[in-house]
Image (cartoon, rainbow, N blue to C red; front, side):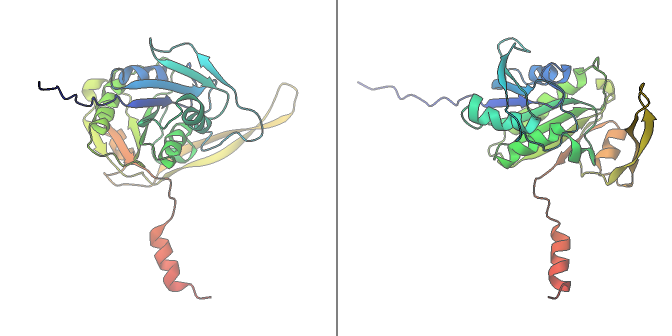
Length: 266
């Protein structure tokens, strides 16, 4: 009698979701909704806003990790007292007990294009995943409002995540910085793979006094773009494209390295 041969069924991917705006932010709910059905989703996010934390980790105080109410029905959620990077580290070791197949961070309330990537907790979480050989994507919407409309953002989030997941072989260190213009869906022209624009903040500290007459300082500044290229993320966003910038944690300037090797004599 012939016996049936069983085919191995492909396991659904495990999708880790985090952010820097905190587990109650509308952006992380929108991100979770956007990728619903693409795999097993687990959310591990800060219990409070952690914007601008960069790649900070908690080393001087204990970390707390608590089961949280689902932000989307059926999704396992955890809140962490630490930074976005702490969330990624803890999720692998204490929640998933394995590396996820992909890590998604966001959707951030506000831009993380150009130099913002250096300061961003959203992108630091994604980069931490990349360091740990977990493909990752950070998503940001160019709107700070808590009442922001994520409709168009959700569409492009799903398109990009699906593109990555269906790839036959994903680079384990893949890390994408995705920014989405805050315009109606019909005005978005598409997706543009870009380079990080050379731009910076021209900053100053306003000196002020509190109600008790004590001096304090408030950081202010203006974003200045020095990059006139039509291949930059700043240009893409200004022209209503979703910008996608591949980023990496290796900060070596290889051009300068070669130059120093030739010119420095000791």
